[in-house]
Amino acid sequence: MKTVIVYANPDENSFNATLVKYVVMALKDSGRSYTVIDLYADQFDPVLKYGGEKKRSDMNRDAETKKYRKLMKEADHLIFIYPLWWGGVPAIMKGFFDRVLVAGEAYTYENGRVKGLLRAETAQVFYTADSPGWYLKWFRKNSDWITLKKGILQFCGIQKAERNLFSVVKTSTPELREKWLRQAYAKVRRACEKGAAACR
Image 1: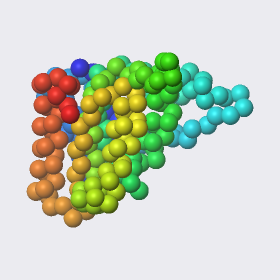
Image 2 (image 1 turned 180 degrees about the horizontal axis):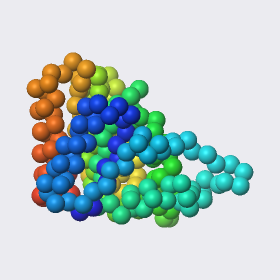
Image 3 (image 1 turned 90 degrees about the horizontal axis):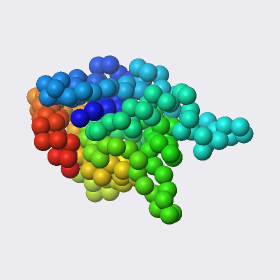
């Protein structure tokens, strides 16, 4: 199982950064191959530019995103790690979706209907928030998760996505954060041991 981790947080000392370490540890302990796409470390440009001679329909030939498109297409399983900012993924990750998950690579249309092209059928999402889960559910209607799961992942062919929200981070104790890290490790190990289809 080839796993690609897409990570977005500029703070090297963040809880998200520690999450990445535990996820990688789980993959290593399971003997799985993996690649980490650290968007900030890569200085990924999230700005989508087209117009004039640069057409949006040509984005699947963009040299700047070629390596990312290849990684996403070849992955058997995807993992996303990020903080929830302003009710959604960080801008750099949204730009990654805009520029990398493009027509002809991540999806296409057949007989007027969308068809996902990514090989990965499963994904795990580990994200943090300073809003409590009940607030996101009852007042925000889990809009962030619905957008990611249905508007992006399912659109590209990923039918099973596992949501793992850790909140409230800013008031969490060291003991609670350690519990979250162990949970993330166990979730990834389970996905590896049972196959990516274990993700739901």
